[in-house]
Image (cartoon, rainbow, N blue to C red; front, side):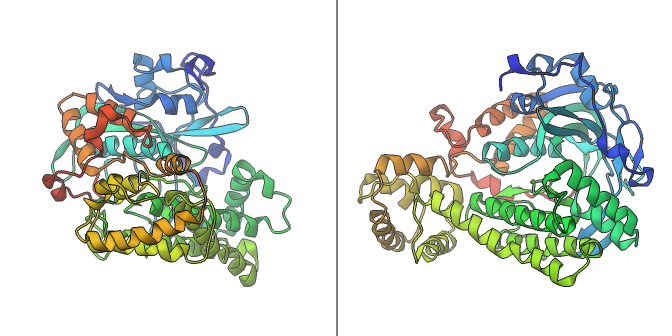
Length: 494
């Protein structure tokens, strides 16, 4: 939609916090802690449209005051939700929104969106933290949320980043910031685990009923609506994992408290996009054991669904029905992976041997440490016959003969399609992005922003909103990373 068609302005903005209708022990209601002299770092016009918010509101003093948490939005009931979770496979007990506040939501044309501020100050669940977020991680979350939306991957959105010169201490002193995040719901797997492990079955049922009524009303008449809920979440999670794998995205902290009940990418921390391909790559420096490495993500998605199933099992009422719901995971992942791979390789039909052909290409990526994104992008431009268009792809591989051998098999498979070459290339280019949020690109933008130059954040946002377009004027943003980028480390600290 366009801004001219937007419904909400700051003058008529009024929120409704549906989560606040749950019993008081599900959350703590409290205001955001004011942040000193807030200023706008960046705002997403696409997210504003998603929220049906008039773009003329962006970067006004009232907008900055609302979305920094310094002024309450009419109708909002800021609250921090309690939840628990498994962290790196170990039960961590009670967690909760330690630096986030759910303000409430807006409903428009049958769609409901919640607004949450991240970095808005201490809550009863902050544990030893200060409840703040740093500018560095806030910019990364803002850019990646919108980049994933541009890639067509289910995700929470980011409306804006509000900065401040107020200092917080992490490894070193850093300036702070607040991110305004959007999602139909911020409820997590760990929200259910909290009540299950505290033996509060009535509260577990209340939460499940709330989620079904709010997000899955079509399940209300199901014979076993709680099993149907687990099926829905399991399928969504499996498909999300396939989406991540297909673009080389690594979340970095797939704890159950970071897993969305809606199958959205949630809680961007030490994420990364694959560059030189290594299936064992770990994007989170804190993850010493590689639990959340690239190759482990599908299995961990399954593990997390099993943890959710354990929490829902008293409501489902039968081990067999619980296991039957979980059994949807492998097929859901496999089917979505196959669908996405056929698109990436430009194949409209499915033939025996396709998955082996795809696997062989990934083996080549692995043995040559070829750049994931550039390899698929250059593959998209190949002709059906050997030509000079092969060279940009061949230049990414040390073992060119092995690639040429694979290409001969690939072209033989293309010949079975009988599809128009130009149509096939266009389809592949629409499935294989040219632009991703590489760590070094984010780092350059962050360093400029730390000096109050937000131009690079804005430019990256504009590029990443259209990741499949050629954008010839931005070629420098779609090249191999510089040598210094290998030394960038991202951890859970933010």
